[in-house]
Image (cartoon, rainbow, N blue to C red; front, side):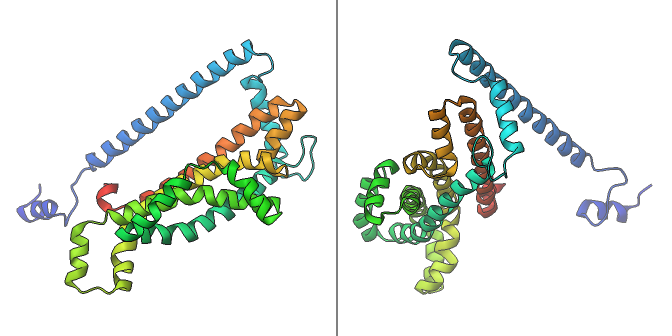
Length: 289
């Protein structure tokens, strides 16, 4: 039987109850139920889409069936790193070429877009000066930028990188500017009380408060860039998984197209999950809880 001192220790957290912690087991059970529910609904969604796809392929004989596309996907993944296959280069090598172009353009967009967004969002004059330009250029299709860069550089792969750069720039600029303009007034007042200089304000207030918006902009930017690379590589006509899709269409290899689409989608999911986890890591504590 526990005495008074042992009971007090348990209440204030200095001891442990004699039995197991029921709340911990309850949380574990709840987590398992949530995971099972998520997996179940995901499988249901995949089944519905596969069923609709099967019906569409039955009505249109040229459209590959899900089973044929899955078989081609397995074949492509089995020879993913081979330099030469009957279908061309290995799909992993083609995806790496596309990812290289996307990452180059994305890094350029981050290097320019983050400082520009911080500048525009923290200054009313800068906002009035640059916002019309951003709103004018942001809706322009990357397919319109590619020939312009091609004329200027006479270099196809470099023009593709620049087209990705322009496409990826605007989500970063807009989200960063929105985050910089939404800094809580209390944080600004604290900076005034402690008489922060410009450098201290940027380091301790502007950047930390804007960081979640920056990562959100990067996530949107990467998603758009990865979608655009397929269209850009079709125009470029040199390597990459986007060119592989168009080349497969011209060759009449439709199962290769659907299999490549699945590869593109899987890579996109991986990149999106990376930025989603990064966004959660830099989010404010009250947002995470």
